[in-house]
Length: 433
Image (cartoon, rainbow, N blue to C red; front, side, top):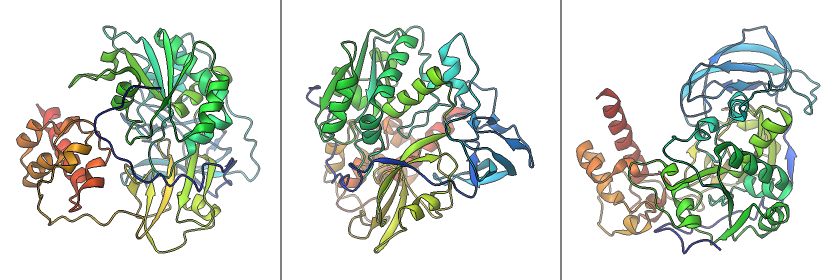
């Protein structure tokens, strides 16, 4: 078992029953593939192809000479039909490349990655980013500061977000790739230990990973608690170490990667395969909830249609999970590397709408639930006034935007949105100073 657990957190209904035992199947080939050039934190890529150009599956269609970035690959053989802009699931607009796929596709073949002396260069060339949702370029995390040696690699198999089962299915269906990726990560950073943390509501995944793990891989069964999959909370749950304020997680001697990221790293190093597809859960208010292996760039509407379409009195559709995901205004937006789910929420299942006019009643529930030991109500009050100095005094930048505060707030104040506004203002101010 892991440690006693991190401070705070919440226990929302999991809603995983609809897809936890549904095998992953390949999603249908869409009529068009739309590839945003920014599917990661860091510098957006620049298109490297032109309209009318033929592209092969695995070919780079976007890249940039920047450290914090990750190239974009075509997941299909086809023809470039547009180089323009599109809206992402997160609601931002940026450069994109659109490809019309050939009718016949061989998904077993692709343009292989070039060999490299340093395997981290292969990870970069493969375009791998954090597949748990953060989408931070993985090759950067694999180069920790020289003064912060990594002693233990931790894989996040918690999947604590409600509704989502893509990581659960991956661990059950491809445990050997997850464990192989963990070992590659360990070797690249020179760590001595590997820990794979899995919450106790995934017994089949625990058994599958445990059967594949050797003596060099520790499988820790953790009590189910949201947001245990968050990097800092997982380090505490597995090692009992707290990431110091203002420091990187590497300051604890730990490096955390998602299980999906680890599997993608194994495929890149051993098979020379770029990141072109991912498992995504389509669930909630759809006729046939499912787990799909879907091509990046597939319109989310295609995945919803494959699941029989939306049903019931749908309140909203979320890209990701309901705690941290983004509500979609248009289902035509494409699947990107960080999209782990498409969730239709019915009225009565979704949380009530936030109340912008309700004053804080000082109940303290948000402070008790906050896994970062913050006072979200205070940050929200200062942010609502535009008092960025006040929000900074209450350490707004330490917020991980997990949504626990909004989940427990009895008056439905938009705490996450207010804190996000404060963080944006503080980071913009810091970049100008």
